[in-house]
Amino acid sequence: MSVAGSFQGALEYFPCRYGKSRLLFRGPKRGLDGRYLAFLGGTETFGRFVEAPFPALVEQALATGGSVEGPGIPCVNLGVVNAGIDLYLGDPAVLNLAARAELCVIQVMGAQNMSNRFYGVHPRRNDRFLRASDRLQQLFPEVDFTEFHFTLHMLGRLREISEERFAEVTAELRIAWVARMKHLLTLLGGRAVVLWTAGHPPPDTHVNALSPAPLFIERGMIEALRPRAAALLDAPLSPASLAAGTAGLVFAEFEAGAASESLSTLAHEEIAGRLGPILEGLLEQNR
Image (cartoon, rainbow, N blue to C red):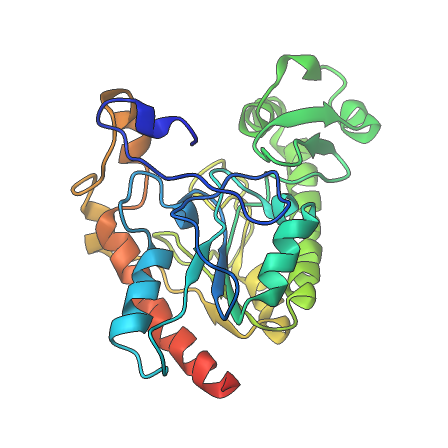
């Protein structure tokens, strides 16, 4: 992220830090002296390859089209590429920023990129696999876990070996995900909107495949968060936004593959269009 703008054709993200956090976030840096909204999430919230990701579009909409008094309210983009819940729960500085926000938006992130009773991930780069627990090594004694550096690579190998044993791992991930999301929402005092950013609705049953994202999340898990959230926005993206492809995205030639799998500019506009009225209504209630 920090060097993307140095490559010809790549988008400049103006990386910045907030408070004492060691994490780099997408800029330009926003002021935190007054009221602001905080956006937490992964690659989609960060807005990879998009000049104006949905947090920026929401800020524009609240400033120009909303009924909230004043010149608008800053929207602080705290999204991080490949982030999981652990990134936020493990960073007191970021948690403090989110807790001070007028409202937060939390993207539904996959359950694979977080530490659990089977394996540990890097505290800041949650897609990086660190170690297998004794429990996982006993469940898959034929696997040499030292060969893995990324969670998806490791999980893909486990699924190839035994779907039945792999299901035990995903069951643990689902339990841990719900518990940590509930904890995060409690820390934010019920002032967070939970946001679904995928092109399909949350599935009603277990899906143990390694696509589509967000991995291993189902409707019941999201519904379990409703009592602790200010709102749930779980509508899937439209077919038009999914078919828009890379039109309007900014990327270097070597980033073309990753860009083709990213949210389109139309998808970001669609998400912002849905979020804006919900956030505006919640802000009016808080006045």
